[in-house]
Image 1 (cartoon, helix red, strand yellow):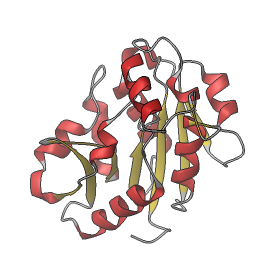
Image 2 (cartoon, helix red, strand yellow):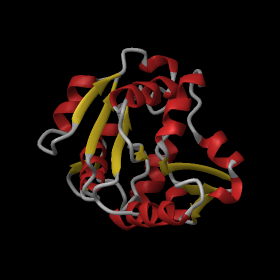
Image 3 (cartoon, rainbow, N blue to C red):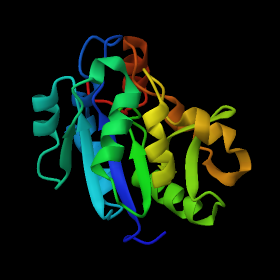
Length: 200
């Protein structure tokens, strides 16, 4: 997939309730996770680069400054992931390419993962690629604008995983066990610290 055919969306609106502090502002190698994810997304050279904020919006946006992202505020962040996807889809209305979607809670994510997803999407019948999470598919992922628009039907904390999983072999899947570690609770922080994926 060429640099001119995709947009990138970093989802950073969550309230990190179970962790008790903003996971977006945790650091790896001195860089906040939100800045790291946005930097990696920007390195894929998307036509559009969006950051969806919600909880701690000002701090998260400040932490991601300087990367040229459009900020999309989700005032309904407390209702879950679906609202962030819907806001991103609305901001991308009329865009004709694929959309790279990633969060802020996978500290092992590298640029090579995103490039693999973009290449894989280019070979898939659906134009979509996703990360394998066991038998399910999830983010980071590359999805079509049609699938982004379908997020209007989602409610609560549901993302695009169910749709991507249901599309089965039409979706290219990336096997990246290191991305199974996402930061949700303090135990996850401890595990990431042990792997050198977060700063102490």
